[in-house]
Image 1 (cartoon, helix red, strand yellow):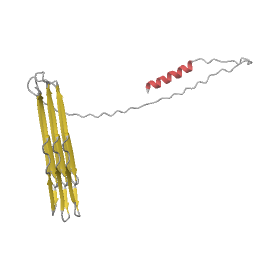
Image 2 (cartoon, helix red, strand yellow):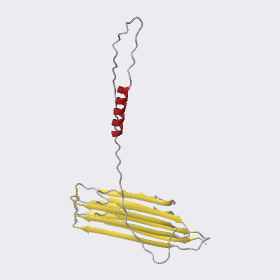
Image 3 (cartoon, helix red, strand yellow):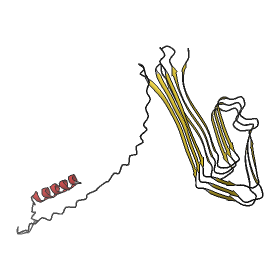
Image 4 (cartoon, helix red, strand yellow):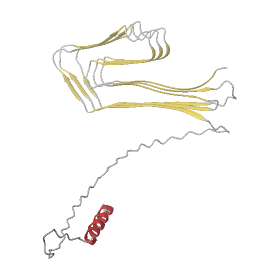
Length: 274
């Protein structure tokens, strides 16, 4: 803005310094009143630019002893946190909660994930993190973590009978890869399936120097909860499922209430094709 203001003043001074030439039209006696009217219109345009930058800092350190300096690395991290706190649920009438998954996720390749919740206030999640690198000197690491909390929830049923059922039948058969499934016909449940996988593949024509590290964390909390049910029928069924598959299969079922369920897998591998 300062540069525009200085430039405008310079233009104004230059305009005032230019001499004014008088013109005597024919037939005039030459006594022309010479004067010069100078007007300056200046327009200043100010443009403001706002930039918002967000930063995320992930602090992690891994140490290895020896003289190994990897040329490439593969890192995979998968994390999930669930919180069910201070919920109140009162059932009247005669409710029926039911989850049903039949003949699903068969003969697929790679990653299949499913969540079902016929109940209320449930947290469900399927997470997969995969990292891959090819090098004769690779470092492979993975971390999978889950945290679930159920605190201070109140569940009361005022009905003659409560029916809650889960069914995963003839599903997740014959697949190759990762299969994950959650079902919650109840209420206020936490369910998680987490997989972290990293792989380093070395060059068969070079001298191998590979390091693989994996870690997993699981934290579950269930405190100060109240359940009042006079007459209920809970049913879980997983008939004919998760057969003849290759890889990782994970499943959670909860026809009840305020349960924490988690499957955590952390895999770090180095592979040599020789």
